[in-house]
Image (cartoon, rainbow, N blue to C red; front, side, top):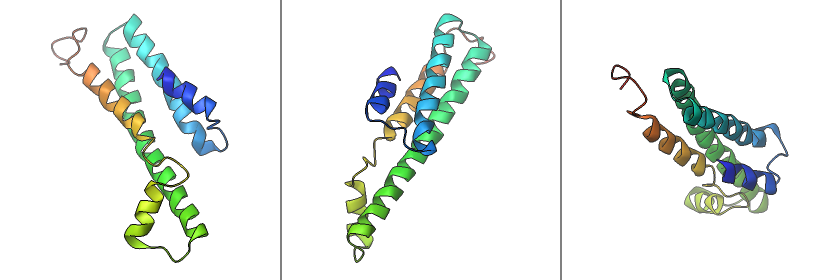
Length: 125
């Protein structure tokens, strides 16, 4: 999380409100991860799981935003492109289309971590 925050800040990923979404989610996620580490319990794990769901949503949303922006850029440069050619141009476009997948990976990793964690009671597992 810390690495992604630094990367986004260094890339100046702050031009529009859409670009602030991953920074906000990563910041809140880092706080919940620290809480889980310091005070593991039912409430903190519920908050952590909710944050991991937000990571998943924001990652998928980011994939869409990056891809849509690349489609728009590709169509501006070569309006005649379509179909599979447009798809490939968009994947390899100016914005790294698959970069937000890192948020999805963090979400899945966090959910695996929180699944059946030893600090949860038997009933919650």
